[in-house]
Amino acid sequence: MTTATAPLSPQTSPYPLETGDVFKKRISAQLLLSKKGVFIEKTKSRGGVLVRLDILPPDRVRIVPDDENASYIKHFEFTDYSGHIRELKPEDVI
Image (cartoon, rainbow, N blue to C red; front, side, top):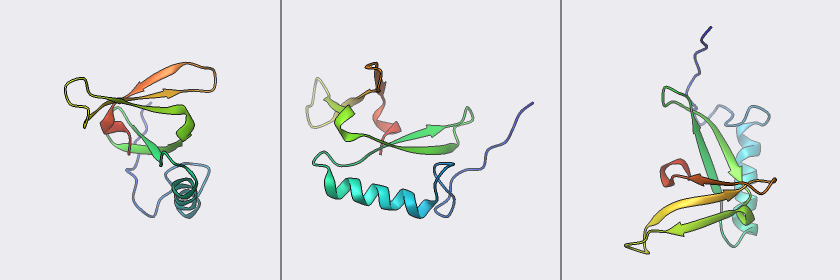
């Protein structure tokens, strides 16, 4: 059984348990309170359609600069609550 997922639009909720307005308020609050800024992880379906946006805790995200040019980002490292480090591609983080 396959299910089709609708792509996100500005009016739909990026997270199934909250409205778009609540999501925007969380982003603005984190931007104002965090020195590191806001990190949002994009989750795509197998077909490449954007289906979910998750705000990552800024204290658990580390920016790894590129080896050749430190002005560019090589990847992000996200440490989850159990201590495991996930490597996130720059195109998957807003």
